[in-house]
Length: 173
Ligand code: ACO
Image (cartoon, rainbow, N blue to C red; front, side, top):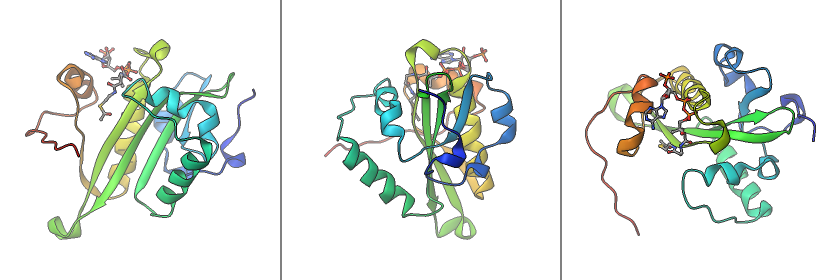
């Protein structure tokens, strides 16, 4: 299937939020853009399953979740890297902008759900996803950008310019 340009897609947020500098560093066969309402069909969940267990809710429920995210403006920034020749997604990530009462009504960017196709790992796609998300976070006025990760991913995030800070706590339902 041929590659679909951004102008023909129904995007989660405006494509102008994606850093041109980060885009220019990708191989010409790859394209970085906001998540689109038809990305269920481009293998979005297949790539997420590289990260963790994914239960396929079906396209209709996936699109309803996409629309719920878009209904909260300037909050959810899901991005993808698409392989142009196949029009399939090869990398995904998200930054969620949390508004606060402290720090002069500041905001914090939370990076979530980073995953790169197993066959494409080690080619700087993860780095480009993190750079693009951090740019969105900083351009949104966030005073910091944070994330949780496993010990084995610490070196990757250090290469992306992050440093270790405090601990993660979790309580599963
Ligand atoms: N240990 C040490 N160094 C690493 C690791 C690692 N696990 N992963 C990447 N690096 C290094 C690379 O060697 C590279 O270094 P260099 O600049 O010296 O060459 C640099 O980090 C950038 O690596 P990329 O090529 O951009 O990494 P990649 O595209 O493979 O993406 C990722 C990394 C996202 C961790 C990928 O391997 C992946 O999808 N893993 C499975 C899912 C996962 O763990 N996702 C992250 C969960 S945490 C979260 O979502 C907030």
